[in-house]
Length: 170
Ligand code: CUA
Image (tube, rainbow, N blue to C red; front, top):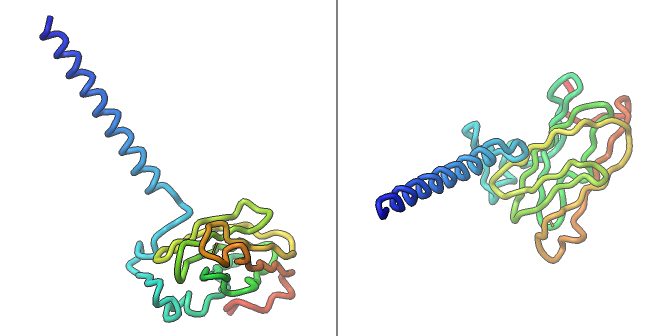
């Protein structure tokens, strides 16, 4: 009889271990599978939050044309602003935002859309957004980042394609 109990205990112990392994696998998979935030170190580059101003893209953040109707927008969040401000992009395009922080954790949220991400120093958050009609969209920080947090905002300005003169088009 004691022997049997022992076997059951072993069985339960084994099952619990399997569950734990399963959880760990799920968590790991979840972390790897998260598309919104990627380390810039992935491609061998490194990003030092203290040397943002020397970075080739983030040192002078702005919008670049990268395809037929595709743009890349490099954005730096820092206490308590977004750079550039405003971020100007042409209408009817796909814009990938690369957002990093020069100091603490911030948020990057385009008001009225579901485009939002956390911005972590040392990492680059990547966010691809379909840009349709011209208009102005507020950008707010949605992570508490200090005493100026509530006033930390930027502007995304979507202009008609023929009025757009920014970006490294050629
Ligand atoms: Cu930046 Cu809150």
